Amino acid sequence: MNSAGGGVVALTVEQRWLLMTMGGRQIVDALIGPGGVNHLMQSRWSSSRVRAVQGAPEWMVSFETRGGKIVSPAFDEPRVTVTAAQINKYAKTIPAEVRSQLEQLALDRSQHTWQINDWCLCGREAECLKAHEGDPLYGGRHHPSKREYNQHLADGLRIRAYEKVLLAKALRLDGREAESGQLELFEAVS
Image (cartoon, rainbow, N blue to C red):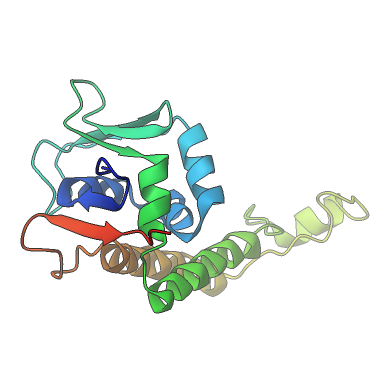
């Protein structure tokens, strides 16, 4: 919300819980920079859950991106809205150390995803390699051992768990949110 003079920008606790409810890579990317916000707003992403995320308002069980904003609930009269401009302004207030951790998390996530780009999970390595010998698309694909595959899954779970902790920190929902229910952020006035 902007004040009449445009000097104060605020994300309420409910707005921050909406971003936390959405969670995931798109919110991490949005908090890193405007490119992530643009992608998020163009995604038409929506979801619903049986229960609200622990700590969020009980009614916050669905969300939707539409028209350059995020609303919740998605299928009823919105009770909370967050705009692209609000996310961009909020992201600028994230401490450099936390922003750096978000950037590293995004890099780790990308590397984790690309690690299996050339994996084949057919379970028939010798037969597969012979059948696709010389094939530029399928030939020479890596057939991971069960240990490698399980490690990849464990790494994915570790990244996702850290993502939740880091998002709570970036959104100031880790027990340090303002008592008033609103976090006020000040722009530099020139």
